[in-house]
Length: 98
Image: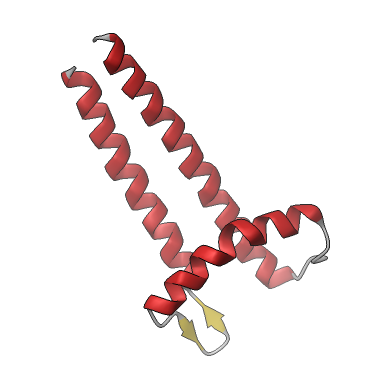
């Protein structure tokens, strides 16, 4: 494997790690919607700022509210899983070919 292949392999690992962290941030946001923590807590504010703009865009495209339940975070989690699988496999395949 060449130096470029190793670099692409590291990029795949970093991207996979970042998407995993974002998946858990989305999960935390879903939990926050159930337990209603202090909205002035810096951790809660950071999680809300990271997730809400994306789920808002999903809600604009698809009907995600069913009564009191919003499934936009679920759709976002599915998108993250798909991106992890697709990009990681693509980059690993590319790295092995170089």
